[in-house]
Structure formats: C-alpha cells, structure tokens
Length: 598
Image (tube, rainbow, N blue to C red; front, side, top):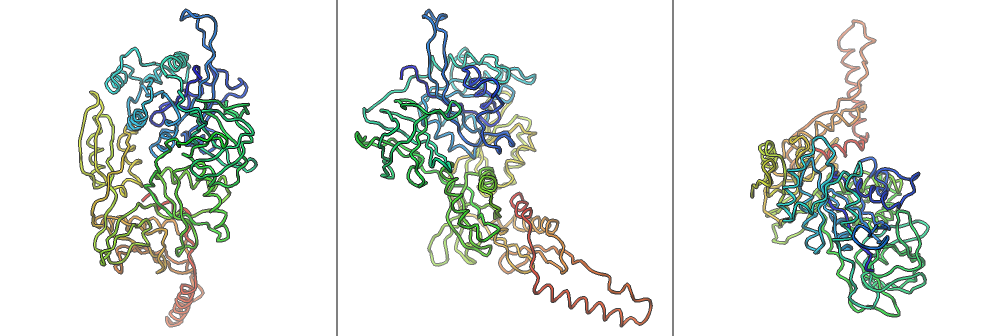
C-alpha cells in the first residue's frame, strides 16, 4: 500500500489531459507498441469523433522507478491508479466522482491559453477534497505558447514556487518522465481507517453478458473472488464472481487490496442493486459506517424524449435505465403528451443532452424525437399554490407569478474581447457582479444570468465573438421573479408540444418569428397550404405559410370564356380545402433540432 498512488488528471477542455494519459501509458509500457493509438482511454466512438472526453476512465499503471539517482539501490515498483476525467462543464459530476477516489491530482494548463474557467472549477473541487495538487504546464512546444505568462498565472493562483511547476509537452513526450516522479514523490500513499472492508462505487456500466460492472475504490480491507458482499445503501447481498483492474484492458486479479482501484463483477442483472455512491462491505465482517457517497446532482436542462415508433417505449425505458447506470447525472420520468408516450429527461447542460440522445440512438438502436430544452420554473397559481414546471405545456394559462432559475457565470477572456462578452451577457439579460484582471492580458467577468437564456446558444456565441479564446463556468444561484410567457407553435392549427417554449415577454416576438421562419424552410411542401404560427395564449405573434404544390389546371384552356377558367380554379380550391381538412403534416427531425438552436 505504501507504493500505491491514486491520482486523476483535471483541466479545462482541450488542454491535453487524454494526450498526457497516453504518454503515461507509453512510459509504463501498459500498452504493447503495436496496439498504441491516440486517446486510447477515449473508448467510445462519439468521444473520438468529437475529440472530447465524456466518461472518466480508470487505469492501473506499473511504474518501475530507478532509485540510483536518489542514492537508493536498483528499481522500486510503484502501482499508479490513474483516472482521466472530462473537461467540459456539463460533465463536472464525472470529475467530482473521480476526485473522491484519489489522493492527488495533476492540474494541466495549456501554455498557449493559460488558466480558464473550468481549470478553476476543477481546482476548487480538488481543494475541497484536500487533494495534493501538482501543476503541469502543457503544450510548451507550440509556437504560440506563452510559458512565462502561464507560469505567472499558476504561481499567483496556487501560491506555489515556480520550480514546482512541471513544464511538459504531452504530444512530444518532453518532461513527461518527471510527471511520474512527481506523482510518486508528492502524492501520499492511501491510508486505512478501519479493519473491515469498505469500498466506494464511483462508476458503473452494464454489460449484456456479465451484468453490472462496478468500479470501486477500496478505502479499507480487501475483496476477492467468492466473497459475499453487501451494498450498504440498497441492502442487496451478492457473491463476487470476479475482481480486477483496467490496465487498460480488463485484467482479472486474485485480490483487490486496500487503497486500490478496480472493478467487481457479481453477475447482477438488476440495475438498481448497486448504484454509484454506494458502499460495499463483506457480509461476514461488515463495516458499521458507510463511506460518504456523492451528493445527488440536480439537473439544469430538461427535455422530452419520444420514440418515433410507439412500440419502442419499453425499449427506451430499458435503454435509459442502462444508460443511467453509466451516467449517474441522468434523470428521467415517464410522461404523456400530444406526441405520445415518452420520458421527461433532466441533464446537466445542452452538450450532455446531445450526447445522451446520440448514445441512445447509437448504442440501443432507437429513433428519437427531442422536444425543445427548458429549465425548471417555480409558478405561483392564482389560488396561491406553488408548483414546479419543467415542461412548457404544463404551464397554466393564468398564474400569479413565475420565478426562473439564475446562475452566477464566470467568463475568462483576453482583455480585447471584454466589450464583446459584456454585450453578449447584457443581451441575455445578465447583471454584472464583478470584473477582475487575473493577469495583464486576461480578465475574469462575473455575471448573474437566467439559466434559460444560456442553455441554448450562449456558449456558441461566446466562442464566436471571442474567436474561441473565452471560457465559462457557472454555479446555480436560486430563483428570481420574471415576466415570462409561453410561446406555442401551431402547424396547420394544431399545437406542437415539442416546439413550445417559455421565454421573457420582451423576446417572445423575436424568438417566435425566428422559429416559424426556420420551420418554413424545413417543413416540406404539401398538396395543401400549411400555416405555421407562433402564439402567446390566443394571440398570434408570428406567421409563415408553406405554399401548396399547384397544378396549372387552366393550361388546357386556349381562349374561351373566363367563366370556364374560374370554374376550374374553384374546383381546385375546393379540392385543396378538403385535403387540408384530412391531411397530416409530417414534421422532420431536423425541424426539432433546429428549434433547439434558436
């Protein structure tokens, strides 16, 4: 146990966490040379396509350190349990779970971009858990890297000596061996508190053949094949069929010892039996106190997911349950709307929502329709009763007041883009809280913003207005009273629940106008006229019309009396009217996706 080190890699998105993990795997010969590839820990296709880490990945490395330089004798073998974490704000729950299983963290900072918003957020998470922080300055080989300025920022932020900052290039491998040495020198070995076995489940996934596979950090005791164990939270008992570790492929072990990170398989088919945050202990020598698990994360963005084929409802339920095992921040509950039976799902952000929908369609072969994303509102009805509304269609027609969720957003950007960022925040009804220069070139802006305004296109606009240099992070603040209305979208006079949304009264017309114009482009022409309207209550605020296909019925009339032409046109008009009464308009999936982005 004295030669075991548990650590994670934390950083802002795209600062080189997965590349550094690759180099550490190479240095410790964890992967044979012929099997090496970039971002080897990003195992999902969707991660590779988007170039981002979505799931935290745990891997065991064996580091043989030459102690001759330190006056020692020969090599010392260390067991390093590394967890590579995501960098995007939407996956911060993954980071918090990884941090709880570690004693130390590598804080990676891009030398060309410096400290960014998610760097700070992840650093504060690590500090809350009293982790040993090792600052690592990455990408020093880039032509645009400003090593001196980035070093100053780290020194000022952490209060460390400049000599403690490791300057590396994960891509070329320069300075990476010193990272392994720093991990073994600076991060403490795990300590045990009680003799009984206690292990914290920090991640799980479902395998069709082996059932639930749980990743566990053993804080006390040990586990081996054949042990009878109990989940202290769910009170379920089961027998361990296999224990092992990822190195990075699954490798079975005889025993999982104290301080180690690995997986346990118990052949469980019941997804509810062993949840993330639960504590496992042995039945014959049970522990009395549970390990502190994880606070239940609260969703910030809600949307409805509906199968295009009604018979797929149960398949969708099964898929969501299996995905929730792998992604503990996902929330869902069944709902019935005009679109049929589906699920109201809660996510940590818009990217999280996109990833979940894409995983459901790819991994479980489902065809889904997603409604417009919304947040949770608090509504006081005329009777004085309060209720929470996540679906715009559930908003009552008459109410006393409505409160919307607010967040405190932190934006870090170069000083030349301060004006552009302030303009964007004011457009989103933001209120300035503070402004601080974190270096001579970079500014930290703090704004109170309505969550409903930033869940759609705020991040995209922030990146485009600052040429990609700005970064942001946010924390929930509470609820405030606001003048909000529900805008319904009607296609051929029928409301489309999935496209309705709640918006501030001042922006209702512009959002309504934008969505009907977009739908006009996307809804295919029919044999009859299709009106597309946006309304607040009974009042229509915007309208566009998809013109009908029209055959030239008077082409065969050469001259003759005008009444003959009128008769043919009237017959055509009557036919179109009948068609409109019985015709259904098929709204393509692209229309729902476009509505999300407006």
